[in-house]
Length: 237
Image 1 (cartoon, rainbow, N blue to C red):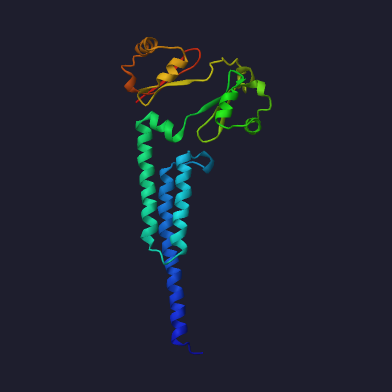
Image 2 (cartoon, rainbow, N blue to C red):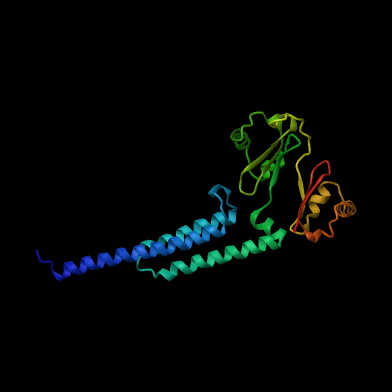
């Protein structure tokens, strides 16, 4: 019943390997959790393309040092920290630059506008008719004629706005005004010129509306939207 020295050394080596694997796993687990917290509270299907790529790369980088003890842990930690730092830099640039945000995250695409299916936009985004019908069904919409707007968001989800007469009525069952799809004119103190021109509006109109609402400047606004009845919603910084 006496264990030999070789057997004892083998068992001791096995215990050390198990402890090493445990410690490595714990360190990488908390490191990855910290990285996912940087992305915000989102589900996988709601991640932007850059965030999804980051999550996939981190999972691959973490798996190698967990399984191969011949690779120093720092060789797995450094690439993960580099990716997390890159993600934070991209997030800051997204806040500072609208053009950079459009380049990295893309921009929403209108698939249905005023009841008309924009086939060119569907081809450009490679969004098929079957996918459109499936997305509408998942939101309880079975009649395409009831859809006023459908927007393909940057995360791949389809946002649907029905015509007022087909929207769920409130408890008072009052008539819903058709205000159309609100358009963002000012985002984080920056004027979106293309949206202003798309609504056939100009700087004179905008300046007059700002003065009517006692808004000193475009830079003082965090958000300003306008609907097709030219009603404003704004939020100051």
